[in-house]
Image (tube, rainbow, N blue to C red; front, side, top):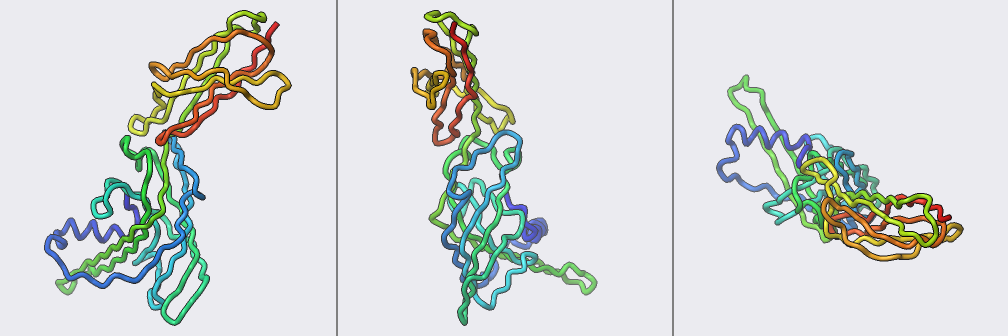
Length: 277
């Protein structure tokens, strides 16, 4: 989703039909985007409503005679899906990066840059394919316009260059997981029923929907113990429902744990304490 000021010139040009015919291609600037890292190398987990701010760092090398003012021209790193020439979706920064010059030569300037991508589940993510691996690319855009028609002439010019990068980022659905053990308290040796629900963010509907057919482990930690142990693994049913039974043995905490998938983030439920009499 391009929301940069430089996109305004392109929109206007398309509306006037001035880009319908091929035009002479200006020389692309020699920009290099290196060491790209998105979200500190961590997966990006997105829920149903909250906007997620994603830090991106990289090293930008530009020609010494090219000035970036981030008004009429702009350079940064974007995320995209699909082919570079026909992107299925893209996410670009809304604001200028912060860059600090680290080296200069007679012909180039190198800077360390940090920018922020804002992922809004209502505005950026639309379909199942948006969960998974996104590619990165460096881009450069520039615009110029003369809309003073007092002399019977106006002009609009827009340029956009994109360079594919080897770095990638993973966007995942946020998940929710609950647990409830009953009855409480329970007599030793009696059957304890442990239920819960696994849901994940549905970006299209804006709600958390049941996540069916997923492996979830029931874990137990005895009172006074320092770690959990796995009791058994079950599969979520209709609506993400979870249910299993165990024999009550000692006081302790029960919880469900979901390891996550390529498209959905891991989640562990808040533990439910059971008093065994």
